[in-house]
Image 1 (cartoon, one colour):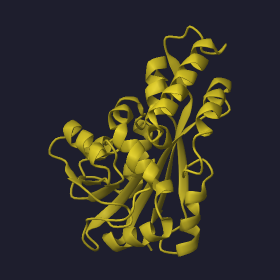
Image 2 (cartoon, helix red, strand yellow; image 1 turned 180 degrees about the horizontal axis):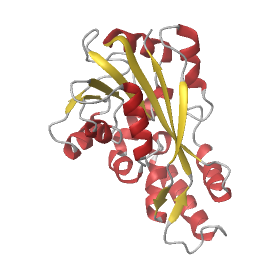
Image 3 (cartoon, one colour; image 1 turned 60 degrees about the horizontal axis):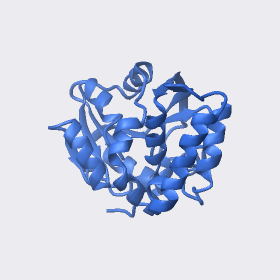
Amino acid sequence: MGLIHPAAADGFASNADDYERTRPGYPAAAVAHLAKVLGLGPGVTVVDVAAGTGKLTRPLLGTGADVIAVEPVAEMRTVLSRALPGTDVREGTAEHLPVDDASCDAIAVAQAFHWFDGAVALREFARVLRPGGGLAVVYNHRDRAVPWLAAVNRLVEVHRLGTPQQWDGRWREAFTADGLFTALEDAAFDNPQLLTPDELVGRIRSMSYVGALPAPEQAQLLDDVAHLVATHPETAGCAALTIPQRTVVSTCRRR
C-alpha cells in the first residue's frame, strides 16, 4: 500500500468520529450531476477512493451502483463499516488500489485528491478503469471571505505548516500533465452547512493537521476558536452557525 501523509494518518485516525459527526455531505443536485456524468446505476461499478467515513459512499450507493469503498485509515474504515454495514470496504490508497485491471466503470474522489501523488494516482485510476470510464473529484469549498470564517481560518492555518490542502488548486496540475484523462469540467452547487458552535469546534478538530497536533496545542487552538465564535459580532449568542459553502464536482474521462 502507498504511503499516507503523516497528518492524514494521525489526524484522521484520532478524529474519525468528529469527521463523521461534523463534516458536511453533498447536495442532491451535485450527486445527481455526478451520477449522470459517470453513468451510475444498477450494473455499474464505481470505486470511492479515500472514502473516509462514507460521506460520498452513501449517495453513491443510493444510485444503485455497485460501490467499492477504498480507505487507508483503519479508524475511518471502522466508522464507515459501522454506518454502512455490508458495504464492500477495502484497505488501500489512491496509488495502490485493491481493484483489478479494467474492472470498474467509474471512480469518485471526495475531499481527498490533494493528498495523493497526483501523477501516480491517475496512472492507477487509468489501470482500474475500463476505456472511457469516468472520474469525478468532489470538493466542498467554504466561503473564505465571510469575516467570522476568515477569522477562524486565521487561527487554524497557523498550524497547517505545509500540509497539503485543496484551496490553491495545485491538485489540478496532475490532470494537465499526464494526458491519461480528458480535461476537467466543473459544476458548482450550493451546499450551506448549519452547525452549533460545539459542532463547529468538532469540525475544526476533524481537520487533519489539527487532529495531529499535540494535545495541549490542540486544546488551546480549539479554546481560541470557541472564544472567537462566542465573541465575534457576527456569531456572538448564535445557537446555530451557517457556513456558506459550495460543492464543486470536477469530472473527466479516461482516454
